[in-house]
Image (cartoon, rainbow, N blue to C red; front, side, top):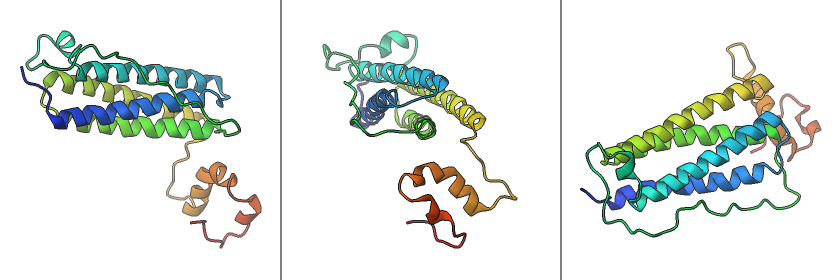
Length: 198
């Protein structure tokens, strides 16, 4: 059975690194989130990121893919074994920093969208059919998570689409007002002819 190529190891490394970062971020977000539903979503996201991270490490070590997809072609052998499979220790946020629930939800939505595309892209670059299936399953999870987050944000009024009759500048400011207000005084937005900050 074929070994993983350097390119395939690189794909797994990049996705595992993204999952590790997500574990750290979601752990930090739990210190700031106020909405109970969003807290539950963050906890689920962290558990799933840990699960994905561990699965990717096991795949790279050749420990699980042949069991999970034993009836498929391909496989892994010759991987270094005995390496502990565990999620990285999360980075704790600095005291005094904070994130609003809207910013947290936006970040989670962006991650889910990005990882859905990233997993599918990696699946097309990997020849092992079992690993392609594993990455496709991860992508499907991220697609479902993105939709759940989108619906949550829409119900909260945090996801405001641009309509044909909307003023584009007002729409942009409405969507980014919360972030921008942390950097600029509200009275700086008083003039409708004032340029947006660069």
